[in-house]
Amino acid sequence: MLDNGFPMSTESNILKELIKPPKLLRSITDAVTGRHSGVTSTLPANQLTNIRWRRSGVKYTNNEAFFDITEKINAIIDRSGTVLLADVEGSIDCLIHLSGLPDLTLSFLNAHLLENPSLHPCVRYARWDKQRILSFVPPDGHFRLFSYYIPNLSPLALPISLRHSVVLKETGSRLEISVTPKSTSGKALEQVKASLILPVEVSNVSVTPSQGKATFDPASKTLVWDVGRIEPRCSPTLKGPIILTAGCGQVSSVPVVSLDFQLPQTTVSGLRVARLELHRETYKPFKGVKYVTRAGSFEARL
Image (tube, rainbow, N blue to C red; front, side):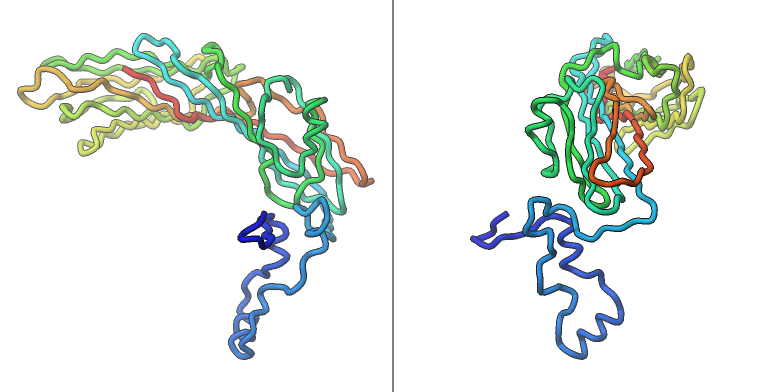
C-alpha cells in the first residue's frame, strides 16, 4: 500500500513486530531519555518477502489450527408467509498457532456454492480458481480467511418459521405469535428473540408467553420476546390483548417483527470442510472446525 508515494504496511503481524506493546518501565525510560523506544528502527525480515503477512521465527509448544465457519441469513417474509428474499453471508475466521512456516490446504464439500468470495492475500488464487482448494501460508493468530455470499437461498432451508394472528382495531385488538424450528436436522435453536415494532397508535400490550419473557417499551412501541432455546417440534407462543389509543379506529402502519436466533454446528448452505492438510512441517497439529448459523437481517411483516 502506498500513501503519497511512501510504502505503508497494514498487516497486523508486521505492525506487532514494529510497534512494541506499552510497558510501564519503557514509558518511564522514554520520559527520562526523551526517546521513543516503542517503535523499532528496522523492518521485520518477512516484510520484504512474498509472505509479508506472517512474522518470522514463530514457535509454539502446542500447535493448533481452528476454523469458525459462520453464516448469517438475511430474509424478508410477507404477511402471507411468502419468502420475498433469502440469502446468506458467510465467513471463515481462523485462529492459527503453528510453528515455522506451515503450508495449509483446505478443501470443501459443496465448494461449487462459493462463487466470487473475498479471499485473504495469503490464499493462492490460481489454485482456488482451478481446483476450488484453499492453499495458503497462514498469518499467525486471528484472521479472516475469506468471506462469501450465496443469493437465492431456498425457503425450505430457513431454520425457523413464524405463525401470527394480529387484529388491530378500536376494540378487541389481539396479538398471537408462535415460532417453530424447521430444517434444523434435529438440533435446537438457541438465543431466539423476537422484536416487534408496533404502530404508534398502540398504547399498551398485555401479553403472556408460554416460554421466556416479554417486555414492552411504550416509548419506542417495541415488544421484545426473549424466547431462549427452542427444542425441535416445540412451538412457543406469545398471545394477549393490545390496547390502542382512545378514539383511534385504525393504525397507520403494519407491525414488523425481527427475529434473532442461532443454530450451532450447522451451515444453512450445506458447506462443510472435507480435509485440512499440513505441508512443509513434520509435526501433527490439533485441528478443529466449528459451524454456526445466525440470523442477519431477518424480518417478517405481520
